[in-house]
Image 1 (cartoon, chains in turn yellow, cyan):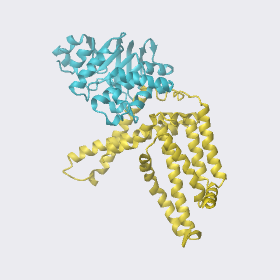
Image 2 (cartoon, rainbow over the protein chains, first blue to last red):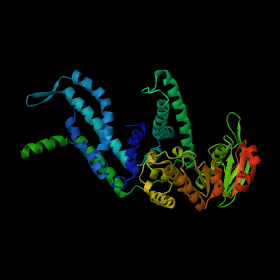
Image 3 (cartoon, helix red, strand yellow):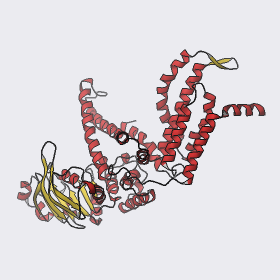
Length: 268
Length: 234
């Protein structure tokens, strides 16, 4: 896969944000708030509370179905984040050897449990963020951040980084092709030329970033940051937000996992 | 309507990129801007939209003077189509790119969608609606960039090298399109045949200022004049 296709891959999730499902239609601030509360609740659990976290799958599952977001697209991105938490979780396997519980003859250690919690927690949190991006246009998200009085410099940095990601990749692809065509069949960039290559890439990217910024300014960017129209929060927006908050709090303070186990035991 | 009086733009290294440039373009008029590389055409366009600061002189769009307090108004009335459409198309989808301007000007999402659809229909490119800007051909990118500007309903359109990256068919389509557009247009290009077909008046630019002006057919075929301006006659 070439760099251009990878850039398309990066932005393919944002392209879904122009959809018109029941989730897309919700007010961005309600979606942002719901995702924030969900993530905060998920990370508030003890590192061995795997059973307590299981019901939280409700959020990504329901949102994915309602926003018609393809699971494959999300999973591909979640898998990028997983290796990072593997590095954090692996030492637990060796450091926490106390038994947590036994299934048949197999004893599961606390280390295995906390390792599983780290992976699962990452999965839930990354899914929540990805679903937020897939169901809300990026411009609306940053507009809400501005409304929440997040310092403007951070938001501009976020916007420019996001926009310039594709630009940097595009420039590096053009330069790499130009280099390869005169590189005498060499694979990759020769170490002798790497410094100059990276330097030129940065200079070219700065130039393009400046032109893109000019194009953005010409179409009203940055004039008044209240630019994006303030949508009214409707009853259904408030209900959506309240429902997510309620379920998060419910599963946070009620051990639904134990209820389910007891229920299953009773019927079996 | 565009009115530029003795406009001077100075770069931080004290280079005068535009020097006492004066031009008046009436309602629905198309003015060609020709000049050698580095004559100051792009700088002039960026200064008209307030992206580059003005050292001296004034710019008026529809009677509104370009000042810091009027930037909102000036940019809503002036649409600049960049030389390289890749610089102008920076969001994930064609829809978002066309919606970028109207959203910044606070239009409700319903009106934004109406503007986007209307603009795409006007340009005959409704097929591009859900596409990624990164996957378009050169001609499609140019049309999407024009749509991104037209969606703001500007009264003055500035084009910087609009035929760059276009094949002959796309160039022909662009000529047809520009001739249909009612807005005041200032078109900078090296493609003199294109300018001759689209513009009723031409301004030759040299060293950041007006060298001469007149009918495109008269200027572009005058070998001596064009050579003096650093250009080549048709």
